Structures are given as structure tokens and as C-alpha cells.
Amino acid sequence: MPKSLKLNYKIIFHFFGLLFLFNGGFMLISSLVSFIYKDGVTLELFLSGLITVLIGVFAMVYTRNHKKEMNKREGYIVVAFGWIVMALSGAIPYFFTDAIPSFTDAFFETMSGFTTTGASILNDIEVVPEGILFWRSLTHWIGGMGIIVLAVAILPLLGIGGMQLFAAEAPGPSADKLHPRITDTAKRLWLIYFGYTAAETILLKVAGMSFFDAINHSMSTLSTGGFSTKNASVAYWNDNPLIQYIIIVFMFLAGTNFVLSYFIFKGKVSKVVQDEEFKLYFKFITIFTIVAAVLIYFNADLSLSSIEHPQTLGAGESAFRHSLFQVLAIVTTTGFVTADYTLWTPFLTVFFFGMMFLGGSAGSTSGGIKVVRHLITIKNGFLEFKRALHPNAILPVRYNKRSVSGDIVFNILGFFILYLLAFIVGTLGFAMMKIDFESAIGLAASSLGNVGPALGDFGPVNNYAALPPIGKWWSSFLMLIGRLELFTVLILLTPFFWRNR
Image 1 (cartoon, rainbow, N blue to C red):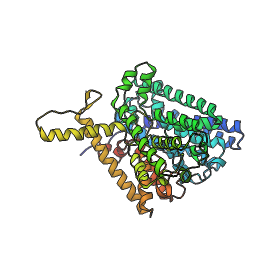
Image 2 (image 1 turned 30 degrees about the vertical axis):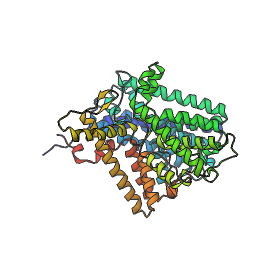
Image 3 (image 1 turned 180 degrees about the vertical axis):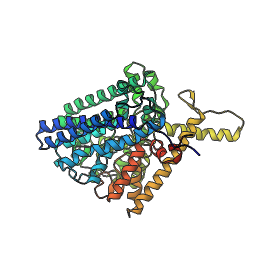
Image 4 (image 1 turned 90 degrees about the vertical axis):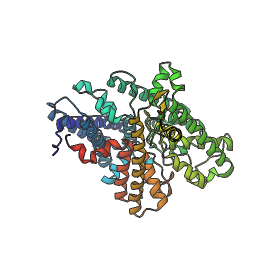
């Protein structure tokens, strides 16, 4: 009989304490924003942060004499339950300020924030206090690169190695290293992430946004989240194309592997140009935009699907801008809205629904399946034709001029099957709640892909407030497994994970 698994619980709870400290620290920053804008919730936000910090300090002190060694199983537990811990503690400011008095709604909003899904239950965002809006955007920003990766950067201070955590958390099927030491990798990723956020904030402010709107939208953009400070999302600035083009640029960057950004800054442009995933990502965006723009220009009425002000640059420019913006918003899973794409044409509704299954690049903050998985699956599919004709030939899948191991190919094929099953089960779950078919498949695809806008009753100009309480919990679960790429969470549900072999 297999023995039950002995876990190092102290190091797990020690790490949870560290997450509470992070969360509490960012809440205290939000209370400072609340104080500056005098929005009336400064004390509540401060108390939220203080309580969260104290819980973190208590957990870390109580578990300080832990065994400083973490195996792979413990890494998976920390990552999966760490996100739940973050969501539970992150809901505290919503309670204390009465911004979202319902526990279910507060947890949903927080999970949507940390998983960078961007689905919201708030009906009137513009009456929410500035401190809460800032905290809401911060949950995106923290979750974007991954609070776990942030923690990996300082784990050596605690005497703990972070390789197991990075392997479980790093976005995409592989974790490219910028530096031999994993902690240095995490630091470089965060430096790029922070730099992009600051650059977009400055550009949006110069383009005409208020500083508060600029920093909130920058955090949402770089995290590919989608929370906005306006009820109309980015459609609020439809009369200012420059603002939307700035967001377009940074959505594109956020959906690109951050390692490539590092190479650009190091002057290694050839590595970017030769990267197969980046080339396919760029081609997808270009082709999808052209298709959408042509159909919009000749068949759709933008005035019916967006808060469209008098055109400053003409109908052609407007069709191109809305197409490019919405294609990037869906492919990168950012979820910002400049128009209701479900009102353009039936073909484009299905077209954008299909994009929810694409995702950005591996190593980006995007959700979804990821472009590299599609690329390797397509390559392997074409090789199957050759293998059928030449059964004895050795025909490996090649990516960036290197042979991809069979284990990785099988892992990717397994991921596709598991993703499809998760989508089907997710849809069935929503259907059992008597949600109509169009809305159910949209909710499942959007939640699992961390997109935000869905279809039907939960489309781009609606929110998730009408979703029944059980539906919000189901959606939150799909967001979590989608953000952590299925295996990290679902492996915890298998009996063999908890046994020693």
C-alpha cells in the first residue's frame, strides 16, 4: 500500500504568510491613494491592509522554524492555494468599505482581478471610491506577472530555493531563463513589467487621460486584465484615437513573451525577428485585423455598437482602429472594450469567440492556450501526413530551429484535450444553471481563457452581475484553472498526487 504523502506544511504556510504581507502592503498603498483623493474610505482601506499584514506577520513568525526545502508537490500546493489565499484576503477591502458587501461578489471580483480576467459584477464603476478602484487595478497588476514570481525574487532572503515555484507558475509551456539564477530572472521580468507600466502611464497622461485613469488603465493593460475606471471601458475615449492607439501598442507588448522584450533592450533584435511564436502572433493579429476591418467597413454600423463620437479621421480609420483594438483585446485576453463586437455581424461574433481560444505568447501575461501551443500542434499535424507516407522516417517537430522533444509535444496535445474538456464541462455547468446556450459557451470560454467579455447576456457591454451566485463560484474556478494552465490546479484533485511512490 502506498504511504500517505508527508508535506512540509510549515514552509507552505510560511509562504502564505508572505502572500498576506504582499497583499496587505499593496492595500496600504491603496489607502494612501484614497487619502490623496479624499474618497471617504481611507480608514477602511488602512485597516484592511493592517489586518492583512498582521495575519502575514503572525503566519511567518509562527512557521519561522520550518525546514528550508521545498519539493515539487509543495510548489504546486503553494501556487494553487496561494491564488485562493490572495483572492480571499484581497476581498477584505471590498467588505470593509461596503463597495461590494456580498462575499460571493467580492471573491468573484478579486479572483477576476488576480487572474487578470477582467470580468466584473459592478454595475456603476464610476461611483466606486478611487482607493477601491486603485486596489481593483492593483489586483490585476499583481496577478499579471504572477505574485508567485514576485515572491521568487526574494525567497533567497528566506533561505528557500524558488525553482519549483517558477516551474509551476511561469506563464506558458516553458519558463525561458534570462539569467542562470531564477531569482534574477524574476527580478528582470518585473523590471520590464514595471517599466512598461510607467511608460504607458506617462503616454496616456500626455494623450489626455487624467493621471488616475492613466495609471489604472496602464496596470490593466500590462497585466492583460481589462478592469477600467469607466463604465464604457476604453469606449469612453472613442473621440480620442491617440489614447486607444497607445493602449493598442502596450496590449501588443503585454501579449508578447517578456523575454523578447529583454532581448530588445539588450540589442539582440535578431532573436525577436527569428522567434517563430512571435512571427505567428504578429501574423494572427494582422490577418484577423484585416478581416474584421473589411467586414466592419462594408457591413457594420459602428454607431450601433459603440459610443462613437463624430469621426475625426474617417470611417476607414475608425473601422481599422476598432478592429485592431478588439482583436488585440481578445487575443491577448485583455478584454478592454471600444465597441460591442457582437452587433457587428454574426460572422464576426463567431470570429471573436474563436479568438478566445488563441491566447497571447508564452511568457506573456496573457491567458488562453498560447500561440506556441497552437504552433507546435499545427506543425505536428502536418508531420503526421508525412509520417503516414513514411512510417519509418524520424520526423521531429522543430521550433526555432531546434527539435522539440516528444514529451513536450505529448504534453501540449494533452493540454489541448484537457482544455477542450474543461470548456465542455464549464459550458455544461453554466447550462445547468438555466443559462442560454450562447451565454453559457461565452462564459465558459471567457472564464477559462481569462478574457473578460463573453457572449449573449454577458457580452462586451454587459457585466457578470446577473450571474447567479453558484455561477460566480463556477466562473471563479474556471478563471483559476485557466490562469494556472489547468495542470497546476487539477493535479491537486488526483489521488496519486497525495501519495508517496
